[in-house]
Length: 285
Image (cartoon, rainbow, N blue to C red):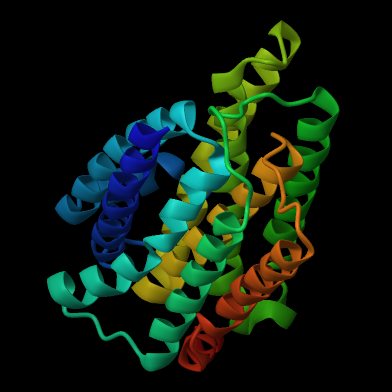
């Protein structure tokens, strides 16, 4: 388990850096389109920044899978969430991007909330990959319906000012869907009947997440877009660890209160992260 947690720390660093590289790379490329995926892919492949970020993200994904095979998903995702502050530091130090006080506060509150959630959990034993078919089908099915609703609704003029934010949330949900399916595949407790659905979920949601992430990165700032995607993906997978894989909640009333506070901090972070200027810019587009 200690090796898994160490890998999660490395994943947090690599993922944030890869996302910043991809954000820089896709800024100068035409907007991705679902109607011309090959042309969109060629445009992205022409950006050295994006290719470098994609390759680093691939290495991070392999390390993430290894971490999930050694430690509970709740702990792994909490470590990744705690690395959210790395995003602001890397963005400022390496790329010179401005990070506002509100964004610093949002990243810090969200990371602290997710870490507090897992700190208050009982002691884990093993990788905790066992699950029931009903639990994972219900959880993943609910996430698919939610993601489909966001995908269909984000084009509405009612949400024009928050279109970029909804794309980031959608990408985070899709990453979470794939992550939970990967964790289930690593455990293998669902048997042969679950193998094909889990593989299809992993590949389909993983590919759609990449598309949604690029669309969100092209239309939003680095900190708010990457931070929101990570926050949603990590929070949903921590909840999935509890509901699907049986990662235990705190046995004490105080622990339960602290966990409720932790979830409230995550929600507050999601509200603070998008800047008002981002909404005005999206409206102008």
